[in-house]
Image 1 (cartoon, rainbow, N blue to C red):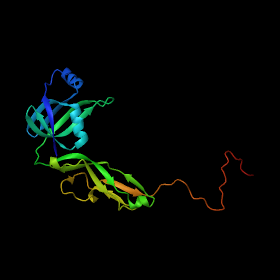
Image 2: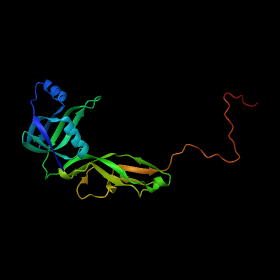
Image 3: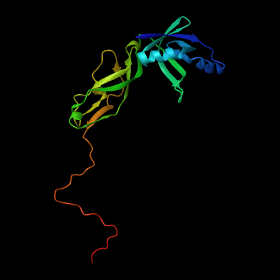
Image 4: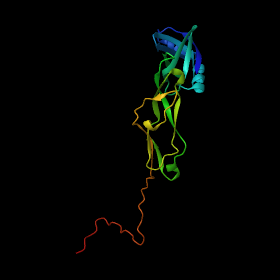
Length: 205
């Protein structure tokens, strides 16, 4: 899915231009890649936020820069630590026929048999690197864990193949495991009571 974002080409200097753009509610941005030299532009912050909220980070964003349309992915961005306002956005121009790699969220689906039996689910991996043509890149990869018993684990290589994308993260990387409940309490022996240790007790003569 491609989302069109209206953009306006901007000057790079002086640096005060960036501050002025942010004050006007626009995000200083740049695009490069796929035989395109770096182009500096600005985009409406609210429009960008709405597009990401509705379509995700891995969608194809078609930049309309003064009538020139460029297919891109949102490559990187920077937000203010405190205000969360946009500081800068970087887009990567892509060839829609060529595969590219991005990071996707890893989501565990279902409740495993082991957890139902009293085990504990431990997730070790929360994102994976996927490869696909830009229009097929997933926002997240869902993994069914319903069949996992206590003592079972799941690695990247166990995830079923998908027709539209491939996972390029190491196949041996562990995604999750179901372990026994860790209890610190020791079982008491019936009829026996342990004697308390006496500090500095004088030995019997």
